[in-house]
Length: 211
Image 1 (tube, one colour):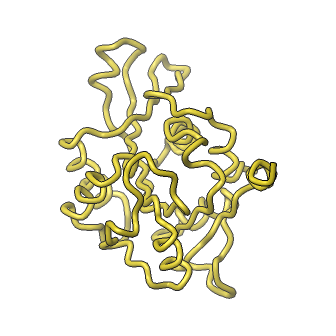
Image 2: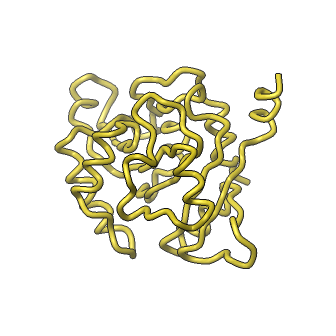
C-alpha cells in the first residue's frame, strides 16, 4: 500500500532540499526543481497532452506562479549525475499546487472555489505556511513513484507538513492514484471524477501540534 501523501511530506526533511534527486539503475537521474519561467509553457503543453480535461489558461498559471513560486515543481530526467546533465535535464512531468489561505480553505469546503481561475487573495504568498494545500494538477506518468517523495523533500515539512490536502480527479487513473494515497471523499456519496477529495494530516502532525 502506498503511504499517504501527507505522511510522505511529514517524513521529508524539516527544511526544503534544493533539487533532490534519485539515481536510477540505468545511470540516469530523476530530479525535482522549480521550473523556469520559460518552462511554464512546457508545463501547459504537458497538461494539454496528458490530461483528458480542460486545462487552466496559461496566463492564470503564470499569475499564480508569480504569486507563489512553490506552485509548480518540474520532474526532470538527466542522462547522468553531472552539472551539465542536470542543467540540460528533460522535463518528464510536473506537480502543481495551490497553497491556500484560511479563506481559500473555507471556499473549498463550501464548494465555492474555482480552481480554473483561483483568486490570488485565496493563495498565500511565497514562503508563508498555508492553511491547506490544493493539488492543482499532476502529470507524472511513469515517474510518480519518484516524483512524489522528491517533491515532498523539495517543499519541506516545516512549511507544508501537517495541513489538509484537497484535490479532484480528472481521469480514472488519477482517481485511482488519489485513493491509493489515502484521500477520501470530502462529501458523502461523491467519490467520482470531478468530486472533491480530502487528505487529513497524519497522527504525527496532530501530536506535534499538541506538544
